[in-house]
Image (cartoon, rainbow, N blue to C red; front, side):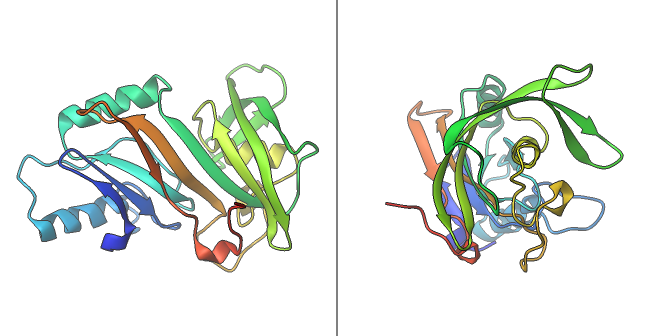
Length: 223
């Protein structure tokens, strides 16, 4: 991990801009993980022995963007509660080849999980075993490189954004699991966790952590 990947750090939390293609937690499969990178970074800067690597939330391996990590157990407990209570505001960006019918709106579905296929399944109506999920979106731009979405998930279900966009005919670029077209960037899809807004576990200040999406997207946020 490079220091340029660090978006914010103090004595209790650290936020990084996770690259696409890297897992958050260590895996028996041997993939590189953010957990391993943070551990190496902490060794380099010689943190105190009671420092932890407390993963406060998850981002899928092929997704890039803001990842929040606690350095103290009390901070992790506080952040976990904020995520569980829905008090953390998340902003994602996605690039698709297709545009939705409306430039701005809300997607409301029911989501289940196909464990054998390792993917989510979207249903338009209630179904046994499926849970309600929703997100609001706005189309920011349409260029030759694709349709740029700003997305605010109201729920945080497994593969929710990926599955909901695919369900309305706009799979994310690179997300072949949900029908997206292959891209040249290995192990990446064009979905980015662009912003987290939360309350600092100790100072109680409102924190806004942002991460610009990768240059290989070939698009920029409109001014």
